[in-house]
Image 1 (cartoon, rainbow, N blue to C red):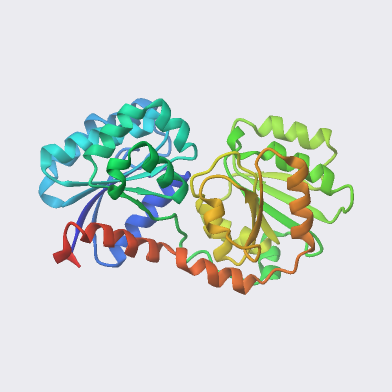
Image 2: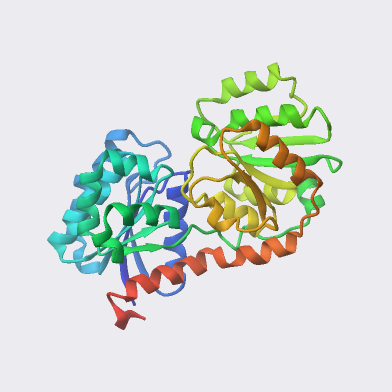
Length: 362
């Protein structure tokens, strides 16, 4: 039985947090012993000050990894871009040396190229000291291989996943009834933080064009963020109050209901790594409408599963949405394709990485 110190942020929301929680749970379910180092502290507070997060990514993380060194064999860090996040991997590189443990780093970042070019030397230190670096897309891997070809053997791609206990195909009418949503509308769904990189303003602009031809559109945008007021103003000025609704934060257990209530999911991001919500959508049999960024084109490999366009192009996005509205989608085919991305499957792939160093733990 392999013993893992899983390090990551266990926040209420966010892709890295979702990945960390679900991967840890799935690893435990298949027999791994997992200890958690939470960058949000040990007391599960809803709000954590930045200095507390920094403490757990630096001194706190170093201390915990050292005092518990007899309880694990592998350190696995879940880190993202922004030097504030990536500093955890620097800390754990030191911890791995001090405790003589293997270090695995999973690097999640929507703008890998920009980050590594800015912090090339720091990234190289972590890469040198890692035994394996897991990436969430082949696009990431190709870029890093070009910069550091001597370390290419350390790089491996394992995508994000979804919780098969929550995300599965359900009856659309029943889900709409649960949410009090109309049955006679074409419903588009989006859930993401209301921040610039998610591209909501381009979606709203695209829908302004789509609704010129048809009024049976209802786009539900879930999430919170600093752009809420700006997006509300854009919706009002465009006269889309009846077609686009900002519904705010929703509970995790309601997300699969919204996904099954919609006709398709749309994510107009300017940058992504490998968005977990994409896997959640297709696992519910819902086509994914999005942009050609990050690892998305590596998953939406056929128009049977979704449609893509370039980011920041509302005219093209409106064309793609119109096609999606008129297309006959095979929800069962999409659901079956999505099965390979369950967290159980991702955990098994991750265990195979661990077992390269501890084959007796198989």
